[in-house]
Length: 155
Ligand SMILES: [Mg+2]
Image (cartoon, rainbow, N blue to C red; front, side):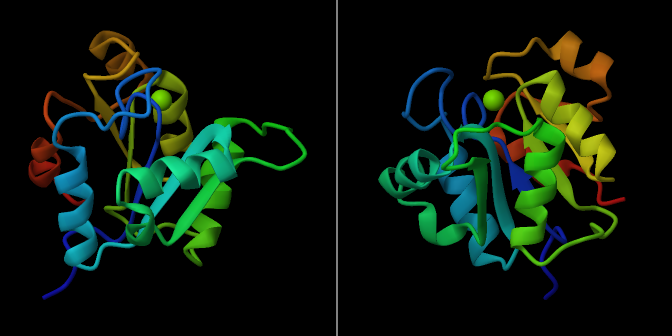
């Protein structure tokens, strides 16, 4: 059976973790594990340092689920979210995302980066951004719970 999504890029803070913490947001660990088990290529795009992001994923037991982790480089320079998402996709070997590929994030900047890369912009309501701001930035849907991702239409 084909994976349910061609690829998914996740934001870290406020999306996989509760805002400002390294604790997992409720339901996200199970979601990521299920997506991985079903063969969906997963990438992380964060404004945190790449090494720190890898440690957080490892603490969550999810590092092995991600084929690509992109963040602030060792030089400390933070590219815009748009560039980080591009790097995250390249880490999966993707230069041109297939239709139905998704970005999940909690900030308008995540949504804007998704649009720039042709990804379906999916907002989350448990992070730092308001659902209204996410929709205004172009989010197709704002999830109240991670399991709602399964009802996002692929196209
Ligand atoms: Mg975030």
